[in-house]
Length: 429
Image 1 (spheres, rainbow, N blue to C red):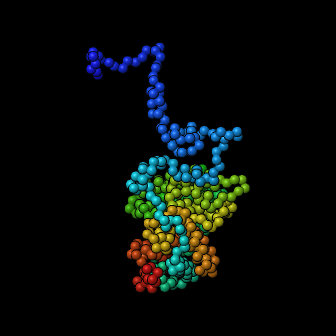
Image 2 (cartoon, one colour):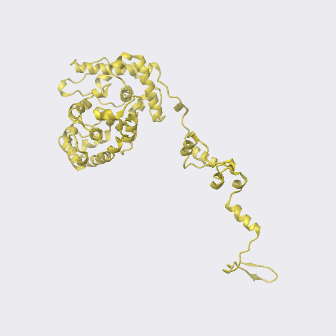
Image 3 (tube, one colour):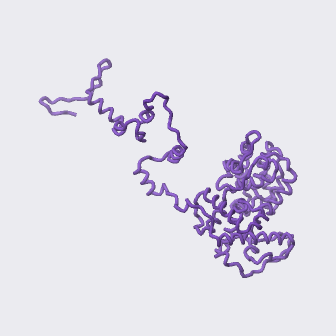
């Protein structure tokens, strides 16, 4: 560019020669320094600990004769810092993210887990006692109907104790009894195979795997296909309806391969899952948590819990795992059941810890309401978790929702169930 002076001259910035000294006024150095360091950092003393101070200011040790040590902490600061990792420190940005829905304040109800109302607990207990009555009546050969509850007579519900269900009874009679000396890792893997597919037909086809290193996913795929070709389901409808439905119209090789990949991951991880200190034991929660880290066994923890409960039937697993009876992961159905008992929206999610606390309180209430029944069936927190899922199904009938009808085994020779008015409609209101 050009400037108008007495003499019109053109000027431009010319780089200095290599040996020429660089001379800048003091004000230029000051301006450069202020651009590099914010004024707020320079005006705050090193001892203030302000988050905006530069690291070298905050880390400067105090002028004492003893070596500088960080202030002892009870872990609260570290926990808070970890929770804010990745979040901006600007209040304006935080407010904008909150208003946009990115940051949600937890609902106030989530801070106060409690037992359900006495009337709701009584309904839940009555369902449990009636279901156990039906099981005993069926076992004694009594004719249908086995109770005066039309919903429990006409629809499919699990027993109060999971060990009494037909699939679990088959597992105990054919695998637990015949392979009772198996080590914990082998037991856990075989129980994983059993529950990932979930049908007796597949378990009979594949058999027990004594050597995990010899397990072959391709052979297991052939076993699943053999079940399908024989007109049987390899997948159960109890845990994942999508997998079950995939077998109804076509040969679901892609679904088989996905689940076999899950089992391969379990095979590779099972030794670490059951690893314990020499002569030590593991808590039920610790083993379940390790199992949930395997792809396909995470989520709500329902499948991990299923597998571990099966494995607890073996002496090697009971010697390794210590179950205090105060923790179990709640599945989706159990969460809906708790929401029904507490009068909340079915999709309410207060977090896993809240649901577990509510299950503990519910179990404690049931033990106080009818100690004779609870002691007779050895009711524990795992039973409560399963029956909360059944309670959700029970209430769903009254809502007009879909629940699988009860289809008795052909050996029972029971005719088609006639329609009856529901005498316990009040339970569903």
